[in-house]
Image 1 (cartoon, helix red, strand yellow):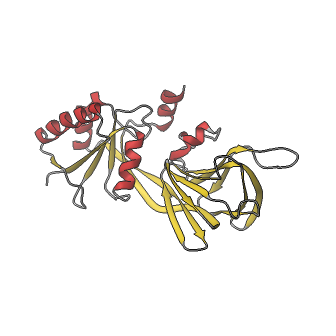
Image 2: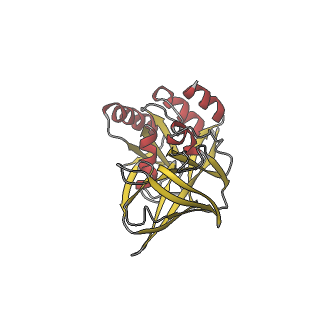
Image 3: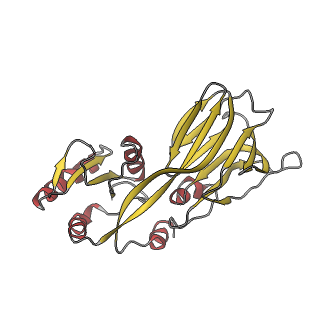
Length: 267
């Protein structure tokens, strides 16, 4: 049976040119390329940067189909291959010289006075106060009170997201084979008036991070940002962060090494 491939791009000139070349090469290699995504797809190819990969995963609702990324962006942590490696990609796929890396996700359950909402992040979910003032959050881990946070907000990242915004905030790089969540403060205030952690907290994946608003923030709007997409909520009572059930199957060549990629991207 022919392998059915769907190609998602960021519609840039460079990405569309790569897509055109890839379609011709796939069809020559007896792949079936389709313009419509459905459950019969065997492989989803993302042409663009890491943002394109994140967009596709959300747009197609975390499908079970394997993803492979062609990097026409900048950093390209999720994107496995470069545009000059298309022949290599087809060869490795046809000869089964690849493995599937499971990408875990994080979820936020937001309870307001009116309803309960749910967000899923691949890299991270942030909770932030009004842009013109600090926010104050009571933080617990599985029922054990940890701190009263004061600052711009907090970021909860997955291992895969540890090299994204989390890294810019001073969080640690985590090997994606480790199952955990990382909580990193965003501009924390640490004075005689306000005391809170200024470094990341790493917690086992089975625990829950609980965030409740104190008297200073009860009547303010808070913004939840999942993978760069913001939503403003009013009348929040609590936000619980846990590992989500959704995963992504990322296709990696046998030669892929996470720490070699970290070295090539950051050093």
